[in-house]
Each structure stands twice: as C-alpha cells, then as structure tokens.
Length: 395
Length: 79
Image 1 (cartoon, rainbow over the protein chains, first blue to last red):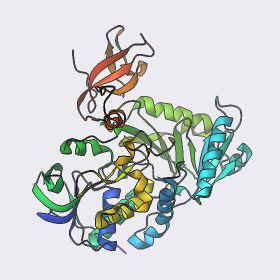
Image 2 (image 1 turned 45 degrees about the vertical axis):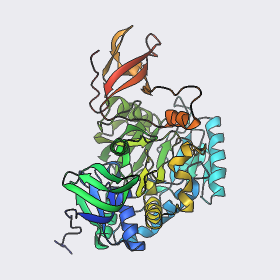
Image 3 (image 1 turned 90 degrees about the vertical axis):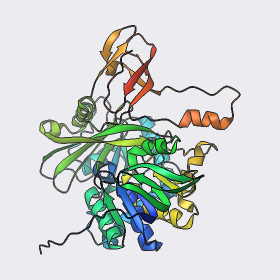
Image 4 (image 1 turned 135 degrees about the vertical axis):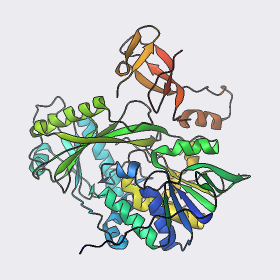
C-alpha cells in the first residue's frame, strides 16, 4: 500500500534540552533512541549540520562482523553483531540484515598462523569461526582463483559465518524513525560551532541558529571528531584518513559471501541488488577531503581482479570515500571526555558501522546513569595515559 | 588524488614518491612528566586546514622534509 505519510518529521531545535547529541549519524541516532526508549529521557535533540547519515553512516560498506582480536573488544562486538538480528523487529523497519558469512583470505603461512591465533581468541569469546583450506574456499566461492597464479596465492582463510551485511540507509532511517517516534527532536542543518562551559562543566552548545542549553552533551560526529576537540581546546588521539569505496554494474548473482583480503586491503560483496561493493583501504596520508582517489581505487581494483579474473570486464559505476578518525590502537573512544556532562563516542575509524547497536546502547547507559558500563570500560580516553591501549590488530 | 610536493633536493615530485610522516610536533623535554609523553605520542591536532607535517622522500633523496599542506584541499603553501 502506498502511503504519503512522512516517516520522520525534522524539527527546529528548542532552546533547552536534557541531552544534546552532536552528530546525526547512526551512532548519534542510536544513542538518542536508546536514551528515549530505555532510559526515559524526555527532551533529546540530535543536531546534524548537513543531512542525517551524510558522513560515515551513509558511506561505509555495510559490513557487520565480530572477528576482531583483542579480548577487551570481542564481547562488545559480539553483542553488537547479535543485536542486529532483533533490530528490524524492534525498530519496525526492515534493516535487510543478511548474515551471509565473511571469508578473510590468508596469503602466507604466517598470516594463516596469525588468523589461527585470532580465531582462538574469538572462539573463547563465543564467536563462531573456522579456518578453511583453499579447496573449501573454492567450493564456497567458485569464482575465486585459489591456484598458484596470483603473486600472493590463497593459502587458507578465516570463515566468520555470523558476519554479513546490513543495509546502512535502512539502519539509519530505522533508528531515526524510531527515535522520532519516542519524542527525539532530529534537527538537520544545525551546525555546532562551540560549547558553553561553566567552569569544567558543559552547559550547552553554540550553533548557527543560536545557543542551546543542555544538561548533557554527547559527541558522535564520526570522522570529524577533531573539529570538536578544537572547539574545546583539547586534542583527541586520532588522525583522519579517507577510505575509498566503489560499486559496479548490477550482475547475475555469483558471490554468496563477503570476501576480504586483510593483507592486500580489499574486500568485496555482492549486494541483494546484484552490484558489487568494492573497498577499500585508507589513503596513505591524512586528509579531510572525501574525494575519490584514482590511485587508491585502481590499486584495489587490480588486486581484486587478480583473485576474481571474471571481473575484469565489470564496470565500476560509482565511487566515493568517507572520513575515518583512526586511533593508533584500532579501537574507539567511548565514555567520559574529562569535561563534566560531555561524553564521547568517537574515533571509530573504519569499523564503526557494525558497532552501532551496542555503542548506542552503552553510550545511552553511560549518559543516563553516569556510570561506565562494563562492556565499554576499556574504551576510555584514559587508556592512553595508563598504559591500557587495546591490543587490537589492524583488520 | 595525487598532488605534487616540492622536495628541496629533488624539485617538484609526485606525492606517491613520499611517505606521510604525520603532523609536526615538538617533543616534551626528556625529564617531562609521562603524561606529557603519552599526549605527544598518541594525541594529535589532526588539523582540517593548513598544518606543518613530515614527509619522507623514500623514492628520491631519502630525506625527511617538512611541508605546509592544507589537509582539506591538498594545497601546498609556498615557502
């Protein structure tokens, strides 16, 4: 049935809120939704300077997974991955969750050994994981070249059956719609230009439409976090890099799994529509410009074609990039900022999308209760000062 | 997106000859507090706009050079 009813009404910000969330992306909207729904916070404003999902939320490659390494992070990512299953029902919006399985290729014995070590950590955390031989991979992905042909042949893989994809726009609008239904004001076109402080306590934000006061302020601005740091006169432990993504023409279904090569920095999947999403490595230098980089894209494409020779004639039809604010230890920063009333959900690099449900849940819990939840206690800013950096590996 | 960097030894060269070395910072004194060193190591200005940064000309003279670059537009400031 066709409906002309608006699924979401954007608002003009009010002068005062209990909680102001800076950034109308997935993490900000998820935190707003959780605050309104589970913590009974009545007046919440989400401020977005462009349009909702204009940053990393609409630019990622839709991958959800929990095959990380560090024992501090695994329970968090596992819970997040499991939360996606129930979210379509909870948000009353089809998020197109498709847990198709993720195959991460190894190109050397050393890499395979490292994957085995990772797999042990992951199994201990209760995450399903398998090591595959080239023959097993070939059965699952017949179009993949597992012969000795490529310069770095496939010697094995790590298979993460619960990994898969979620439609990122569906997730964004699901959260936005559900937050709106629970009384959250979602205000796009409102740019935060500064903060009002009373001593060491935040009392509100300055915006292009005037000053707004708030009991608490939560920062969830994705790759743009250092702009917030400059407004506060502090530094965050991040450097911003763009990540390149491409899509191809629509083609007949041939690829059932998400296939990645951590070593050669490429990954690809065929969406439900039939086009391939190709990614992606960070550009090799700091940049705040979400341009398309010919050099990076062509290098990715060349690497993918080496393993999927049939794709040599596929056409890349679109490309884009998104900004990733990366920490040195490949883990995010959630929790207190050092300024009373101001909480952080930043430094998500290129792994923020999959963590949306859990980060929304725990950031909301932290904002509402003031206590750091157990599952995110290792992700604080303080870890950089007390020698508790997360022992993550880059994947 | 490629651009040119001006190496004082080799002249104007493609950025792909260089390796990015991060923003230029001043190190704390050796006897400084450990927190000052943690901040120096892990925290960055991460400027959106002009910043002074290190580049290593690995495929050229092999020197580290300092460049003032706009991280939004990739424009290089004239000396």
